[in-house]
Image 1 (cartoon, each protein chain N blue to C red):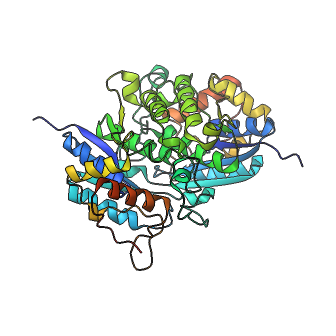
Image 2 (image 1 turned 60 degrees about the horizontal axis):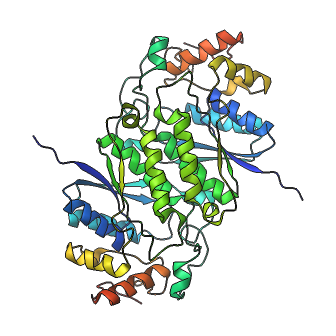
Length: 230
Length: 230
């Protein structure tokens, strides 16, 4: 029996993580998709994640639940207005109020736990340092430091049996390149959800940082975005 | 107004974390105690944590809930027998089945999130590399790697405003030294709970690795252990 190698893939339900899952699948990994219900403002993205995991053929999809609102702060989890219609330079630089403290560290920690249980030494995360430089935990040097820590944290690290790799296939891509990759890999674009503030009628707001980046990416790639905007 | 510096202290409810909280309080920090309800076999330790946080004067105590059983495995979270009556050498070496994958990484990640919200740059964790060398995520090199990663993960790391320190005051202490420190710092020993397998009548089992280490520590320190054993 030649079992396929397993990978844990963080899946938010957005375009980037869906594309990352498609890339991991394309590499031949049996993929375990992991999402989080952490008290974010809306659950729309979790429905998207579930649909995408199914459509792309993930072996399993788990949603880990906890509540980051216990600690307060951040536009995604508390009662702070999501910024809208910001200029491109403002989006690309500085740390936005939508930053959730230590979020990627928490997400990667759970991915690490699951990877260890699965005997997997591969984790995929869709961080991107180009279009969205404002988040400290999207930088390559952060990912490298997490990988180094993770290799000291686990049984395998002690026994020297296995070396954990954190894959970041999108880290240097522009949003347009991500759209092109998604199209080439048959990502079900209509299932992906990027908006921070879904409208009551189910449309994306079109004006938050995430919508703006997404729309510009589709425009620059010359691809129609199937998501409906307000 | 001279506000006291804040520290986040991981508090399991055991002797070690209670002693660590007492040391952090003694250093002058305003302490924010953090516990986890993660699907462990018993909740006795969470009651202990709450009582200890109150007795030692923590500013706040939060319990973050999630379920590690989703990922399967480990004697603390699944249906595997807790080992009993193991010899001292067996306890000190090798990775026990009670090891929970990436547990300290997950715990420290939440501590990091809370610390960032609180404007704190100090986290305390009661890892110990001497009495219990079997856990990969209790080793000093692991803690250093986490600290390095954490300093790249946060806003403060980007802005260069604040450097996070992970304090491990017990890391080189024997269990007897921890008992002596606890006594010197007026830790309410009767409130601490170490046993992996509480008995139906509320007694500690006395035979799991954790009970054995604790009892030997009290004996070597010449201190009476107020906990009742089966």
